[in-house]
Length: 237
Image (cartoon, rainbow, N blue to C red; front, top):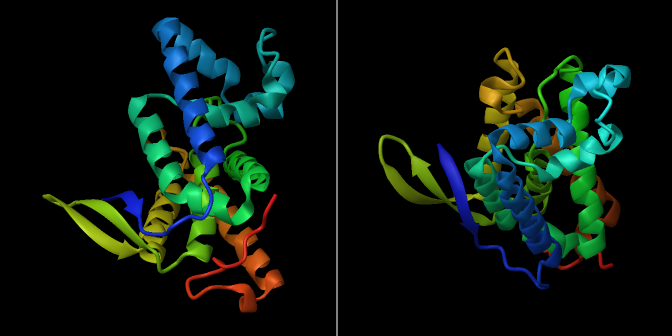
């Protein structure tokens, strides 16, 4: 098992949006813990994305007034500390460079649309699911897909768990490729939510981010690219 902890790709600007997203996700989770176990479960039901209810709103409880906003609100909820910490580490490692490329405002749009693409993919394969989908990982998967296009040769330091624990430095395209194919294999293994993990959402988010950046790079031309991807040209806004 590989767990990324840092990369060597520098940034030009301060990643204000990435920092804000980490802060917002963390604050929401910490405050939600004050609700107690039963209140927290109800909170996730109210603001998590439930495909079956979204596809059939008449089946939703009458107090679920936020139903049509849950594709967005669900991206800022997490089921536990490890869920939150893991997602925020991945967001910090890969998000700052993608924000550097897009600029702050467009990065927000890219992040949210990646999350919606992930939810759409999950719903396509699980339209009758009554389990709330929560977490930022679909949106972050889109960020990771974009990173694979922009910085495939960046070095990513990972913790390697394989009968022992050690550090390894690997190319980003290898780390992200392994991660993606693991998500794909798990999603095809019989359940898109094996072990409570929405693997199909990860697959959808990653494919969206990868495909969009491939398209942008093609449109803008390789003449504007640095040796490792389009580093010298950035969208500013």
